[in-house]
Length: 52
Image (cartoon, rainbow, N blue to C red; front, side, top):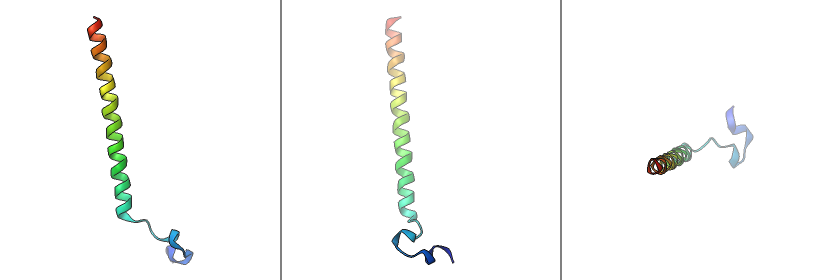
């Protein structure tokens, strides 16, 4: 029987391409967050190195 008996557009199976796009977007957002954290850590290290 599956999802067909529910009717309506919201009952359709998920769009694989849309899910792939969301997963890709999430991956790149996480990568950007990691890069930002790495930049902040490097900046903090450089500031501490200059004080020494």
